[in-house]
Length: 510
Image 1 (spheres, helix red, strand yellow):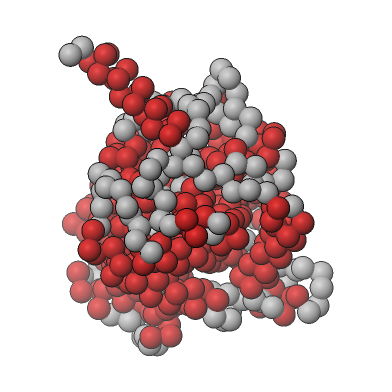
Image 2 (cartoon, helix red, strand yellow):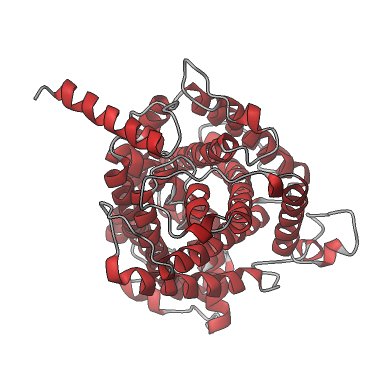
């Protein structure tokens, strides 16, 4: 058979599959396995999270914080196993929204999706404000003279958000090309820097990961040190969010999700270990100086080499921002297509030439820019965004377990957990619930009140300024969602159409 005929046959099959769910093919289906993996890997972006929060782990429990990486990777891989099975059953734009829609009753599904939508929007903001933390020092290393203050960080973040908006509107092919090249650059860059540091600048020895460096290493402090790893390893469901633009998504989506988590674990683990080994002087002095990867590399290499590293980091953060917006705009489009959001008639508009939901993309960017009005630093945005992501995953996990106990799945799929489905779901809920408690725990290091930020964050209400940041973000978003659902969505029917045997039980979609 001619390759072109085979490709055309696959495209027709994918479009027919989509039609069985009640949707027509509006987005351009052009992505393969590597592109799907690359988008998910970019969302995870080990470079971005390690660059931003390495110092938090180091100053909390020294080199021992390395062990948070495999623990979080394992916990998230358990979550990813269930997500991979869902991706194999429901190859639709919107991932968490589509999955919860088919597995839970409408109130549960809608709130899960609403919280995930705004968690994604906050994640866009958090990554956008991380971009100047790498870009400004990079430009200064090239001879520029920019102050790395909150004002300039806000401007660079806005410019970054505008650029990725234009790229995402232009089309998935352009995004995939940039993303694929960027991922290769990020992986090679991190691995090369790691091996150079480990082989030629090993000041602490390979055993540094067993030393606390004089810090108070307890279970409580270890839970705080986990935040770098927790901030990194999520968003792997992005591979399924682009399912309607992926060829043969039932098979390729699950592979991309699992490979993205495994790849991020290996690449990030190598880099963290090497960076710890390359800390100059004593481990105690590195902890006292709150050294991050950029400072470690700057202390060991020439200015040109350090600037090269910052360039790699800047590229990684940029493609991370690109991937996150690609995910969130498709989630917004998927919900709007089912009339589940305010202004759905506009948000579901697809440009007939570019085949992208351009209005959803602009709306997501505008909402992501609003937190910059109260910008107090990347850390606080990361706390709120990550906590809400884990809350959304937990709510979806509850829906998955209930559906499994009701007999789901009833139809075979290319990726299936079989008898391991219920144990995997129980482990996932135990992990996710434990981390939710960790996120929500009120403490200055990981969930501070605005008062504990040194007045950098001010909600202009004394009572609210004494409440933890994550609590405020979750309650406000949930409160607005509850009001909208009660006034509007409660009376609208759920859009649930699926091939025979896909639904868990009639009661689940009532």
